[in-house]
Image (cartoon, rainbow, N blue to C red; front, side, top):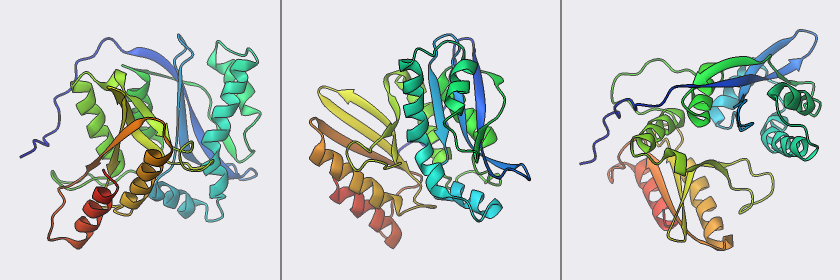
Length: 263
């Protein structure tokens, strides 16, 4: 039997100081109403950054409930666009304080996408802090569930990240890996983590079978494309929020879809 009890809190070094901005969608500039859709985080000491934007269907449903006329295409393409602008900023020699970089970057944003003022935060590392801030400012909040009730991908990713930290592997993993180079340009999908071992590149992705079993097909397709196009050996692992039962048709669908793709 696999022990799925929550990991004990991980002892860390002293927290580091960060600067972050909340990314807002503002469809009506006159009314000035917005909804949070992402977080941009800086380490002022190293200029390292993390950027996380909504990507799950339940998150887009929340935006549509508030703004039915939302242009989802703009939001879905935002991550790639802003990352390229960031690279351009460094190429142009604009580096140093996050305020200068964001000022340059902000000129590329649509009027309907805006950044909040700079805010300070503290955390053990960028990856942990971006997850915490995203949960506080952007993630869809659910009612507190009783112990054992399956959760969302966000909860599952948080659990897995804590397991990786306990195993002292977190700093050796690549996080939120884009797959567009293996599928098609503009593909917004990102795999949770990637690792390298003995010439093989591995990928780990969480799937909430209780909420989004169809994600199994998306992962299976992505795995097949990477197997076909990559110039390296690859392996895939899926972490599900509950054990897959042979007596449940939905569970069989997920299990067989993943199995046929070599996951």
